[in-house]
Image 1 (cartoon, protein in one colour):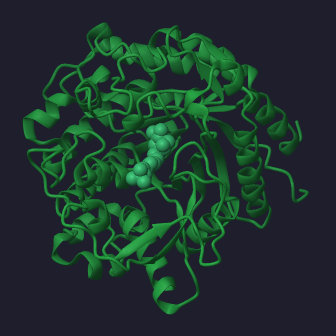
Image 2 (tube, helix red, strand yellow):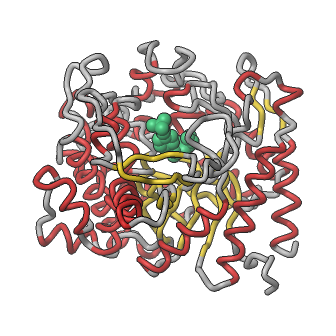
Length: 477
Ligand code: GBH
């Protein structure tokens, strides 16, 4: 293999998530999710819009499969909406056959198009009924309900699936939904955002229950569905933290930042416990795993599912975090920045402040995860938004050379590591199409496909054609 090629069985394609693309929230018996109700509040998203349209993919999915095929993708990551399968979510609640058949038809059609399905069981759209019933992931009741849901899905769809993802970014769901309050269910100590919540306590409880739900679902899959012959794993968001400078305190700050953000919910599934450093930082607010929980967690992911977007410099905070700045408090004395000590920016500005392209950081995080866990890595998301893209008309938006540079840089970085022997098995670009980007509403466009906000009409951006050729070249097609 030349240093530039990817293995023949490498999976590549595009990713989406049900709450961001499907729309049709009440079609065919679906129950509401926490993202439907949260985004309908009007003041929770940048443009005041809800996710009730998405990309209209519940109705237009055939077109999407045709497009993906034309893009040369051999794989597609999407998520299943729990409240389509069990509208009220719980283990004694009715099952909705129409929801099951929607996904079965979708998966069959992907396979017919030569595209391998990679479904995620939970990409943040919790059935609202479970939030109302017992506060969702704050309550360990959720573990039995999630397991029940997972069992139904494996049973109904698992014969068609070879790679399962359990939960998307538990670290982001816990922190943005229960500390900062920017994501559903919107809980925070900030009383302007939420009547209830404790920003420095709840994220850790939610994180704990998310991991136990993941581990319980994996146990079901391994014990009851092993004949399906698939692999299953958790997806963790891990951006890289580079020390601001080589002083001992900032080297330590970078380790702290990465531990607080990412190792928090990655170590338990690969090593069986929270990192010691996190225990020191968070103290008794971090729940403890019982011995049988540790045993269930350790090795509960067949691979490391990685969502990676960018890199920050991390350094010690010089000004104390304000009394209502719960985000900074969550970082326990560490600060992130995009400008180094030499005044140089870590990477060019993109269309959102948090997502600057830094391909060398991708290499560092991949190498770090491989050395720490020794597991196969599936890159399950990676992508960017172009500067000014939010205000662009179609003609301008489709000329997304900034995105092309990003993909070229990141994929080349990944390919170098693969050729050094790091077992990276997939690359899923975020996103297939411009969609509902959570608190940004429809203003943040990550797609390689432009979606007209009024009509839902799709137009490939230049990056879609670029990736097709680039990946064909890398895979020797
Ligand atoms: C992923 O999350 C999601 O899985 C996907 O659904 C999403 O559309 C995609 O990335 C693109 O955003 O404003 O400084 O507090 C990414 C995780 C974590 C990205 C929090 C934005 C906000 C940073 N996100 N972050 S800040």
